[in-house]
Amino acid sequence: MTPSFEQISQARVLVVGDVMLDRYWYGSVDRISPEAPVPVVRVTKQEERLGGAANVAYNVVSLGAQASLLSVVGEDEASHQLEALVAKTGITPHFGRDAQLSTTVKLRVIGRQQQLLRLDFESSPEKEVLASQTAAFAQLHGQHQAVLFSDYGKGGLAHISTMIEQARSNGKAVLIDPKGSDYSRYQKATVITPNRAELEQVIGRWGSEAELIRQAQELRQHLQLQGLLVTRSEEGMTLFDEQGQLHVPTQAREVFDVTGAGDTVIATLAAMLAAGASLREAVPVANRAGGIVVGKFGTATVSYTELFAAQEKPL
Image 1: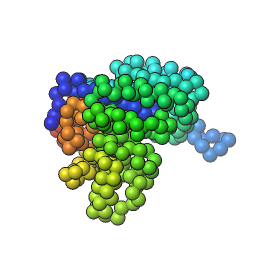
Image 2: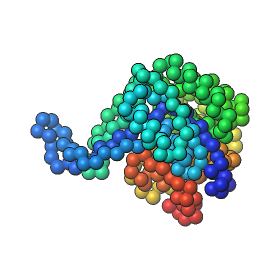
Image 3: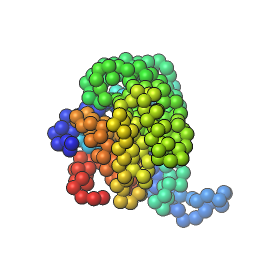
């Protein structure tokens, strides 16, 4: 199905997970430091963007759907900057606060159109704040057709198993961008979307396509998932479900920057499911969205017009 813009605009997605502030420092590189063999970057421009689960929610609203964002932030400058950015997007925020928490910031230094360095600032939220977010989730998820968990392993999803159970018992589609090697806490979700490297952490390396199919289906059945969607970079993506496998080859014209492509894929999936599409209908659309966004620099998004105009012509 190709949903109308009206159908997409009525779709409501609750995004739950770890939010981040992405900072970019751009500059020119003209010399090597006399202090150490590293380039000297003369910073000429600074930019801030939504990162982590906030970028996922931004991808949802960029498509024209509605997104609520449930997360935990600190009481610091970065959290207020995140709030200001979120306020400009149309995302509905539900932020718990922890004064002891440092809001996650990823600072990227860019010179000559290349990322030279990334600095991460982060800590984990207090259990009391996480518990309050579980209560907020119980109130919020019923107002949305799909729930998307964006797990970056920063501690914001300590109670994810309870949340999945609540959402699924109320008939909501549950999508998860997973993290780590233990997927047992994602049991009974609708679909999880590991990339190739992430899946290898769980099932080990596969020597053939047949071996991948067997192991992926075993994992899907063990976790009681409707679907397991593996994003495979230049190989496209493969959905494993009860019907078997659906492979969609990559559609990227030119890979400029893969930052945030996974966010775009799962956000598009969630918007499509919330609009009434099936998983098998949603996967080719999500693949197309990922193909568009890797042609852009930094964490980027795709609009409804871009996405469905691309359907009319090859990328």
